[in-house]
Structure formats: structure tokens, C-alpha cells
Length: 145
Image (cartoon, rainbow, N blue to C red):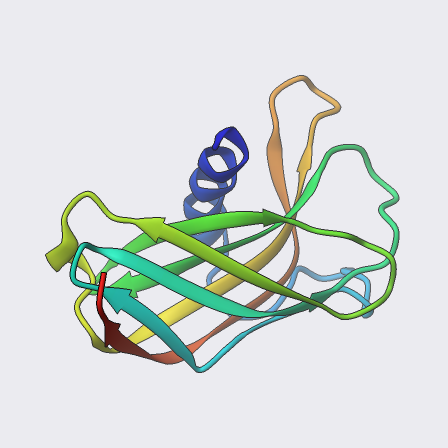
């Protein structure tokens, strides 16, 4: 649960730092993340997003996560975080979060953002370092829940 909270909080920080849908200058070309064009939202407010990522073995300090979010209006809602395995291979990720207000993210078209990030712990305070991002329209399908 702690991992999800840290990653979900970091997605908001990373989203604020990112004006575009691309990684920072100098990011390794082997670090990629994609979000599926489809997701789900349940009546109880549970949102599930998924996609793929790949990353090379880390050169910095700190854990690496795939965080995700859904943009509704001008608000980015963090949808979980998945610890990443950085071995150069492609992996899948699935993030799920139950929002406290189910009506916040309704079914239909929205914008999804996936971020591959390292939480740099060298200073003691974990700061997000964005390795790759993907941001595009997503169709959130209604499911029972």
C-alpha cells in the first residue's frame, strides 16, 4: 500500500513537471512506457489502467515505478503505481485505484498518462526522475464493481 501511495503522489508531481508527452532530454532511448487505449471504471470508483514498459538496469539510486493517472478536466487523478523490473525486456503493468468519489472519473473518453520514473533517494527525500511518459486519449469502459 505504501508503494502505491508514494507512486500515486509522485505521478501528480511528475505530471506537473511534464508539459509534454515525452521524456526529458538525455533520457535513455531504451526506457519506454505505453498506456493501453482502453481502461475500466467501476460504479464504486475503481479505475484500472494498463500498458507496457521496458527499462535498462538502473544507473541511479532509488526504486523505479510505473505510475499512471487519468486527467478529467484540469485534474490528474493518480491511479496506483507498479514497481518496475528494469532488465531491458518488455513487461506489462496494471494499476488500480479506488477513488473516494466514484463520480470523479466517469466512463467514456478521458486522457491517460503513464510515467516510468525513478524515485531518487540520494538526498533522503524521494524525488521523481522521469524516465519516459505516454499521454493520450483513453476509452474508460464501465464494469461492475
